[in-house]
Image 1 (spheres, rainbow, N blue to C red):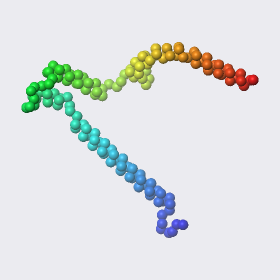
Image 2: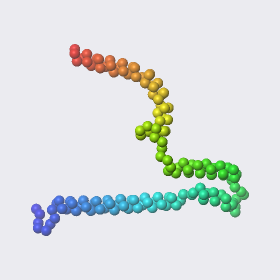
Image 3: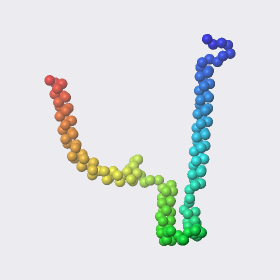
Image 4: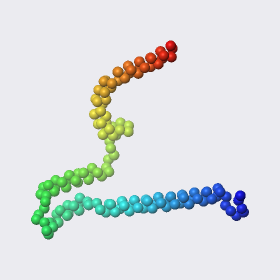
Length: 144
């Protein structure tokens, strides 16, 4: 029984749903804010190649006997890492060979094609014979 001035069950449920929706939005916003903060703090921790090279060129630590790596090795590693950094930068989109297929997928398809052909040659004829025999037996069993 509902008294005058009291909200109905539907009104109470609608109010509860609004509160839950508001809380969910607030939690989602807080989660997004924390993710952004984590992303920013991680990006601040990244040591750029230029900074690493500057550290290597600044000299030696006071308590060290000399560099652990020869200058040629350091230059070689630095050029390799620079090449890797260039590849990691979003540049050209992957080359599309066929609709929905990247060049890596095409390469894998070419590698798998001979293996699949061999498997089909070995397994398909006995499988078809067995299935045809089973179907013939099923049809013949219905007639009999």
